[in-house]
Image (cartoon, helix red, strand yellow):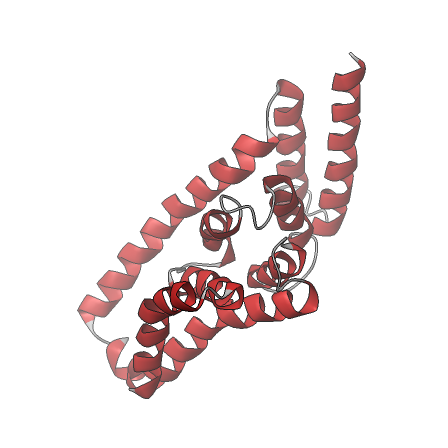
Length: 203
């Protein structure tokens, strides 16, 4: 019970406290905590939430955001670790190691608190028909959220021509059909996109 109380206290009161104290550290923690609180269905769902938290305010440029997202696809581990990158590269301090640690702790904290709160009741809850129906509905909704995250910001920022579409399609086929390791797809895709950009400038 204490864990769920702490979860909601931080979620609801931290933005007000950050404004009152004019603390960028609290704003940073609050933004990533809120993103971690609203995610269900995997790390990719958090992408638009993180972009909305860091790009419009000028903390991180959109190009830097997308470059980090691409790099995160090439390494193992949960996509939530992308938060550490964002905290480290953002313009206003705290950034660097301190910013990365704050962002990483903030995005994982909601899951930790919710799991701690639900563990004593989970075995009973998961047997209830209404809970199973609710989870099926949420899982179905997540598919739509994932498609939305693919379209914006990834597709709208990365595919501007037929050549870009061909490159995206080739990367997709390499991952799904030919099982090429993701880090190879990311590196080759980045090099190919750079070449396409240089070719566009030359023409």
